[in-house]
Length: 229
Ligand SMILES: Nc1ncnc2c1ncn2[C@@H]1O[C@H](COP(=O)(O)OP(=O)(O)OP(=O)(O)O)[C@@H](O)[C@H]1O
Ligand SMILES: [Mg+2]
Image 1 (tube, helix red, strand yellow):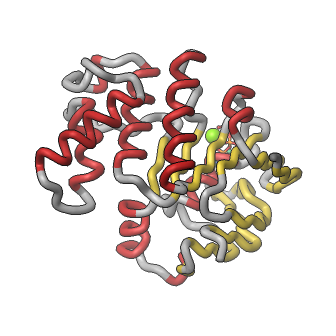
Image 2 (cartoon, rainbow, N blue to C red; image 1 turned 60 degrees about the horizontal axis):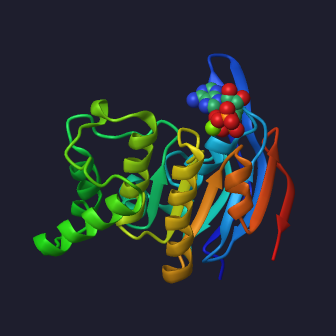
């Protein structure tokens, strides 16, 4: 069974009297353990697609199954549960909590899920912060971090709960090539060791190099879908 299955997914945004068709009929199957990138021109629908897959937004039409569950049949509470437990989301705009430190932003994601032994939790959070290159910056608040450092907190936050699926909207947009490489290595390792499924949107050829499947989206439709060795 596929981890994710979309059938005829459409999204129309309404702006007053104008209708903006952002997705015009997406059919897509993603298996557990895939490492996939979605690419395409600005405005083609990448963010819209990831938001819908991540239960942050609802499609105007079509069906989505995630891990055997029909999302259209779920209420807000059910969708929130999936978001919290099963999906790690890395946003184009980070979405960090401004009053919390880097450490607390990451810890919060785990605290939402279940009770942890405090020592074990601290080790887990410190380990993932170090893995994304934030050692020594744990106590800084978002406004005391650079764009790339905030991005790394957002990445750590998505990975720390070891979700089934990680969705990342242009994860390398604010990272230099060395950091980008390091962060991608962390994700590749998770993909290999835990079988975590990754879907990225990106314009970045360095990120595309890592992907084992390339999905091109144009004008709200999949125009190419390619797997490679
Ligand atoms: N909330 C919204 N209300 C109205 N239109 C929207 C909204 N969000 C996105 N759109 C429109 O939907 C289309 C797809 O947008 P989307 O953000 O998914 O593109 P994208 O591929 O992520 O682009 P980029 O590469 O610039 O991030 C665009 O035409 C955009 O203007
Ligand atoms: Mg986008």
